Amino acid sequence: GESVGLHLPTLSVQEGDNSIINCAYSNSASDYFIWYKQESGKGPQFIIDIRSNMDKRQGQRVTVLLNKTVKHLSLQIAATQPGDSAVYFCAEKEGGKLIFGQGTELSVKP
Amino acid sequence: DSGVTQTPKHLITATGQRVTLRCSPRSGDLSVYWYQQSLDQGLQFLIQYYNGEERAKGNILERFSAQQFPDLHSELNLSSLELGDSALYFCASSGADGYNEQFFGPGTRLTVL
Picture 1 (tube, chains in turn green, brown):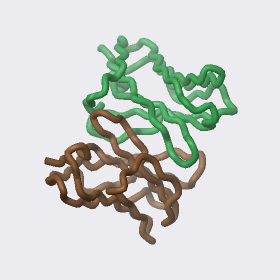
Picture 2 (cartoon, chains in turn brown, cyan):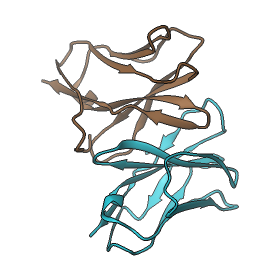
Picture 3 (cartoon, helix red, strand yellow):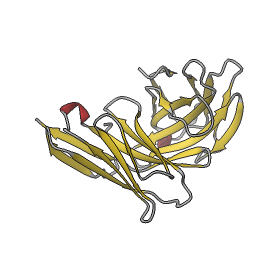
Picture 4 (cartoon, chains in turn red, purple):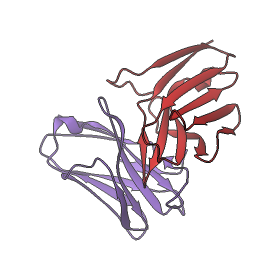
């Protein structure tokens, strides 16, 4: 993703392995969560969402897990590919706005 | 391609100046959101409009303002620019005002010298 001054957590995985990206959210009243992927020079791209009445939701190669007890969200990417290399953001919906986490940079080694 | 367009792609200006960023939402989307992505603050929500009316406000400075026009395009006005306003500005749109995916545009990179 875009190089930023923030010290982003970095996850480096081998192609074909599974990736798990974690996120802690702040507001226990948040009822909607989204994962976005941002590639270098592009805007964030929706990956998957989950409402607070669910614990798990699956998409194509991705799974989001929500643990409301500890306010934790995770994104699992199966069989990670080089094209998955990007910065991943979790976001929580608070009223009308999305509050984004700082992001995790995923690097996939071929 | 998300269907959201933003112009200009790049903007270089001087401190104290005023600029206008433009966003066209996806066809049929009523909500427009503005975000700032800076080097030290990450991705920050600025403001949301829904069908022409302001719906939610985030960390938007008083020097910044936005509006959504009857044709649903939106403009973000930044005035009395400071060096710290240099950032990527993203517009996103969604179909409604609730639990909807937001589609992001490619962004406008603003550089204040």
